[in-house]
Structure formats: C-alpha cells, structure tokens
Amino acid sequence: MCADQIPTIQSNQNEPNESPSPTTRFAPSPTGALHLGNARTFLINWALARQGGERIVFRIEDLDGPRVKPGADVQAIETMRWLGLDWDEEPLYQRQDLSRYQVAINRLYEKGLVYPCQCTRKDIEAAQSAPNAGDHEMRYPGICRDLEGGLKPELGDESDERVGALGGVAWRLRVPEGEISFIDELRGEVRVDVQKGVGDFVIATKLGLPAYQLAVVLDDAMQGVTHVVRGHDLLQSTGRQLWLYKFLELEPPTRYTHLPLIAGEDGRRLAKRHGDTRVDHYRQSGVRSERIIGLLAYWSGAIERRQEMSAVEFLEAFDLMKMSREEMVFGPRDHAWLMAGTL
Ligand code: GLU
Image (cartoon, rainbow, N blue to C red; front, top):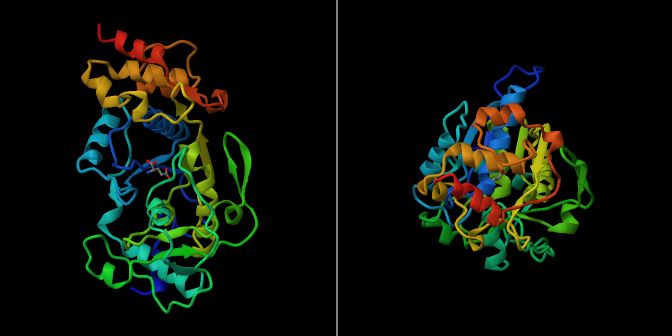
C-alpha cells in the first residue's frame, strides 16, 4: 500500500467545507472487566454525547496492552448495555486491519520523522498500552536518533514470522522541541512539552504493532471523532497525539474532556489492590444497575447524596461544569452503599 492513500483516513464522511458532525467514541481496552472508574468515564461520555446530540462510535482497543483477554470485549459491551448505555455504530476492532497504520508509518518515514530504536525492551513494551496514572514514564534521551539503520518500518503481528526478520526494532517519532497546546473542557488551556516530558515516543513496537499513541490518532481520525472524553491520566498523551495529527495532516478532535480519576483510599488509581471493584462483581452480587449509576452520579456531582437512578435520569441531572476537578475516592462507605442494595 502506498503512502498517498492516507487521505482515506479522514474525519467524517462530510463534504469538504462542511464542519464535521459532532462525534465521540467509546474506546475500551479488552484487558479485563470494567471497574467502577471505567464505568464512570463511559457514563459521563455517554451523557455528554446525548446532551449535545453527538454521534457515539465504538472501538475495541485490542492493540492496547499485551494483556488483552479473550472475551473481555464482549463482556465490556454487555456491561455497558446493562448500565443503560447505547451507541450508534457497531464496534471497530483495531486488529482487524493494520494497513491504515502501515500507511501512516510510511508517510512519517518518508518525511524523515521516525527512526528505528533498539533500546530497552521494557521501555518499548510500555508503549503498547495507553499510559495510566502511576505508570512511570521515563524520558527517552534520543540514543538511536542519529544512527544510520537503513531499515524501513513494517508492521506485522506477534504471529508474523517476519517480525523476527525485521530485527524486532521499535520506531520512534522525532518530537520537536517546544510546547503544543489544547483546550480541555474542565481545565482550560493545557500546554504540553512532549520533548521535555517523554522525548521521542514509540509509535510502533518491537512486536510489529502500532503503539497506542499512533493507533488512537488514526482511529479517532478515521471514525470522525470530534470530542474525546477520557481519564485525566491521558492528558499528557493528548500532547503526543497532537504532534501526530500535525505530522499526518489529519484533523484533530476539536474538544477534549479529561475526567478526574477515581482513586482508592490510598490515593492511587482504582485498581485490583482496592478489592473487587468490577461492575460485574457487584452485578453478580445482586446489585441493580440503578444503584451503580447512583454511586457514579454522586461521584460526578450530579446528586448530593447517593440515590438510585437510571442512566437517562443521570443524563438529565449531570452538569459537567458542576463536577469536581479533584479525584474522587472510593471507600468502604461506597462499597457498603452498593451492597445494601442487595438486601
Ligand atoms: N483504551 C484506553 C483505555 O481503556 C482509552 C484510550 C483513549 O481513550 O484514548 O484506557
């Protein structure tokens, strides 16, 4: 496939000059069951979309993370439906077709914007996943930037024998110095200096797969996404993604909303260490979806006391501007309130 085919990756199916129709997306990674924090992000994303008449597209980020679990995609979809969420398009699976990423990498390569890198495995593997809070991201000091390699980037997948033959190199983007800025709906103008922060980041991994940062840009552009709603842990990643939009000459989303995270009582992002916070765990214990939505609504500032409500009632009550900019804490009282609903 040749690089000038990239114009197929464009926002919306509108005529030129027509502004793209407002579109947001659900983009779960099928790495495990949805927990309360993920559910809160999807619920708010859904409510903002339905309040603003945005189309909701769906994408399964099955390139995101070496920990993709079979069946987790179907389970996430089922849990989201059970909570009362809906969307307007069938899910797109990233792995189904890698050619659009290859086209983009070719284009970056031809512009001299990427280079092969043989540096540490750990550093490069980390690039496969969306960076989450608490992930320690080191700055890449540019060790391989000026080495002559004579290699060309070629994607495959883990089962592709050619991956070994390609020498298992990762590909990094030459990130310019200086800041890139965007408006976040909750925080106003955000300025990110990517070169000072993480340096030249990985866009294709040693496994021969596009890294999260590249995949998310291509797919948001291809699916015509104009509004990205996601956790605050991806705020810095938005800076990286904006460089890619620029270099690939793609239209970036016009709106970004990075939501404060849900933490455990130790202040760390909600995770397994805080007990079983999977939505399905509560569901299997007999908790009704309205009770879960009630807790998520309380965390989102839509109600002052925990009370059962449907997703539609949440949508009517939720006001992004009234939401706290601080992290919310999941504690024993939240758990007790959920479980009280099973009596
Ligand atoms: N798939 C990512 C996650 O579940 C989300 C990435 C994004 O919203 O850009 O953490």
